[in-house]
Structure formats: structure tokens, C-alpha cells
Image (cartoon, rainbow, N blue to C red; front, side, top):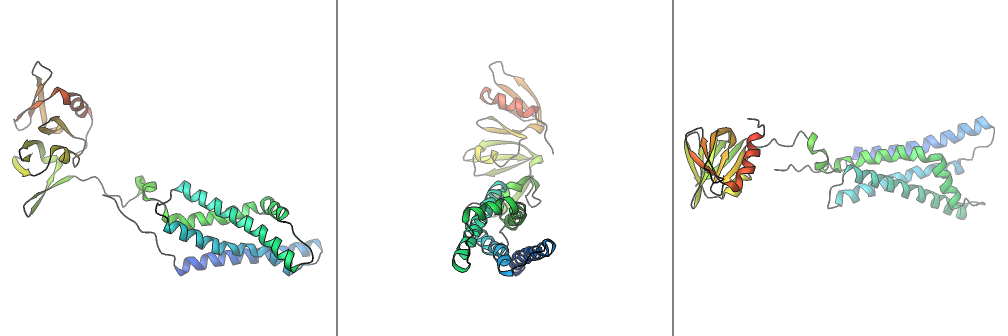
Length: 271
């Protein structure tokens, strides 16, 4: 059984948080330029400051586009996938900023800021800020991480079943696994022996074994036993064994299933 957890929709609060973070970073950078100009004693040009600070606003479309792309992806990403996506989005932002500054300076300014110098400046001076911003993108996309990533810690993951649901006609009977002693073929059915009762169902031994836990083991092509209900076993002298169940039933252990039986008997099983 698998739980399906749908990623939350992008709420207005999420949108506002992204836009406020980008706008706040832009304003903070312009304030830093102003304070630096005052401290160093040179003129402050708000248009140049805005040109080199407004690139943080690019985070808004990048965050939203990346989220939509991840949301529409057929496969749910892992933590490593999201880390790679976040780094790739950061690189796109840095390159887009360098191109944008170059284009604006070519069209609107009397001097040009070259693309390579812009990119070098961004990497050498702003890398930590970019890493912090795109760590935010990682957590922004975290609801889309594959359930399997957190399966060992997921409180919503159901516990292994402790009962076997048997359907007989229109009636369904949950049988505790601890009450099942053994299961035998009874063509065209199989017979589940539990608490002194026999339940006939139309299923194969192989199919029913898949629904049981590790305390159950097949000992013959016609029988499955609960190892906790085995009293003793005695060699028949030809590689096969007689297995005595706690209710007094004698079953045959085939040499072909002997190794699996020994291993199952040695395993500790929780009840």
C-alpha cells in the first residue's frame, strides 16, 4: 500500500514571499551602494545602482517557472535532483544578469559593461548571496520531493499488515496472522487453518504467501507453515522431514524447501 501525497498548490502567501524576498534584496543592495558611496566620499548614481541591484528581481520568474516545471514533471524529484535544479537555476540567473547588464549598458548608457566582466564580478563578489537565495529555492521546491526519499521517516507510511483478509462469498473475514498455523492446498482451493478453524479460499499458495510476513515459509508444493506453530521435525531418511505442528497435524517438509525452512526457523520474529 502506498500513500499518495499531492504537492501543495502555490498560494498567494508563497508568491508574496518570493516577490518580497527579491524586492527586499534589491532594496538592500541599493542601500548598501548608498552607504558605501557616503563612506568612500564619491557620488551615488541611483540608476547605476538600480542596474546592478535589480537583477535580484529575476528570481521571481525563475522561481515560478522552475516550480511549474518541477510540478509538471512525470517523476517526483529526489533531494539530489532538487539540489541540481537549484544550482542550475542559479547559474541561469547569473548568466541572465550578466547579459542584461551588458544589453542595458549598450542601449541606454554612454559606456558598456562587458558580459565577461559582469559574469566574473557576479561570481567573485555575489556568489554567497546567490547561494543563500537559491537555497531558498531548494526549500521552496521541497514539497515536491519523492515520497520514497523520506519513506523511512514518513509517519504516514502504514505499518505492515497483521491480518489476512479472507473473502468467502459476500463475507470478508480478517484473520490475525498469529492465529494461522498452516495453509494447505485443497483443490481447487487452499485451506487456511487458524484457531482450529478451516477457511477455504480460491487462491494459490504462491499468491497467499506474498500477503504473509517472514514467519511463514513454504515447506512443500502443497503447504505453508507458520514457523511459530512448529513443534518439531523428524527426518524421513530420504532428505525429507515430517513436521509436527502445535495442533498435532503432521506435514511433510520437502528437501527442495528444506534450506528456506531452516533459515526461517533461525530468524527472530515479532508477534
